[in-house]
Amino acid sequence: MRPDVMTITQKLMPEIVEFAQQLVRTKSFTGHEGDLANLVIEKMKRLDYDDVSVDSLGNVIGTVGEGTESILYDAHMDTVAVNQPHDWSYDPFGGEIVDGKLYGRGSVDMKSALAAVIYSGYIIKQLGLHQGKRILISASIMEEDYDGEAVYSLCRSLPILPDYVVICEPSNLDLSLGHKGRALIKVIAKGISAHGSAPELGDNAIYKLTPLLQRVEKLNKLLQHQGDASGSIAVTKIESSAECLNAIPAQCEVYIDRRLIMGEDEEFIVDEMVMLLEGLDASWEIYDEHGTSYTGVPLVLHCLLPAWEISKDSMLAKACRHTFESLFNRPPRMIKWDFCTNGVATASRLNIPTIGFGPGDSKIAHTVDEYCEIAQIEAAVQFYALLPTNLDTRVA
Image (tube, rainbow, N blue to C red; front, top):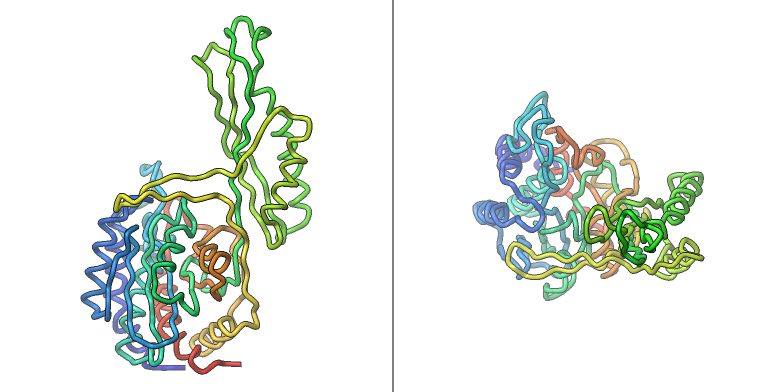
């Protein structure tokens, strides 16, 4: 264990917390991260990063060191919206600290981690912990609705892919060995419109999909009986098209959120949808989410995002475990996230060894009165800063 990491982190904590507060106070909804990106760029430059750049989408990449082996730490800048600000006990953009907790939208998902990892880059450089390494700190965009797409583009734009990736999503300081994937499926039924006073003259598209709703609910109950290791399925949205409210709809769309475990790939989804739609007059497709980054570049996410996991016996997992034990004098708990992350790009699409570690409880993300404990921010800074030295030793 490096006591100098703990000493410098403790000294910097007031500054780190103040920066985390600034991040929370700067709105950065998905697709509108520009103001926050400028704040991150300014901070990285003040902390004397060797290089700070922005790619075409608006991802910010800070670099420390010039070694042949590279580690990418990723923390996304965007947050979900605040739809009910009056329900909050504290201003969702106030960055208030109460009882050792930082409150506000994005405090746990994931601006506390962003502050932690940016300062860890500074500590790594100050203490020379990057020898033989190139440390990349990614402040990425549009994760909330476009999981992995921006980070995939970022990685592909680098001269060489990173050797290791740490996803800094909240894990309650547990080591996350992977995540469940997700598929967003759109089912379409077509009918015939008619006046609402004569429904028998039409063909109601909504009714065509009524059996599907029941089948999805039944399938999810079966999945839940299989325990935490199973996926899930749910209808999340229903839309219909009609000339007016007193007309029979000529089209209906049902959206299905399918959470995936290892082995549930596109072929698996095809077979499952054939079963769910048997005997129904309907078609389906994997939904494509279209958006535009704050720099004006179009982004499309094909919403079939597989699960991924890394072996607990991999070199990256062993190095993380050794780092954790040397800092906190106990073994880390190993988990897998039940939500999707940017790891879908690095682990699934690019086959880069990827692991997750971050401050805060993910169950508090996206909720009213979202918060992150200051003590966990400090622990995360120490972990991120010390990890490169343990990868260097090839711990067994």
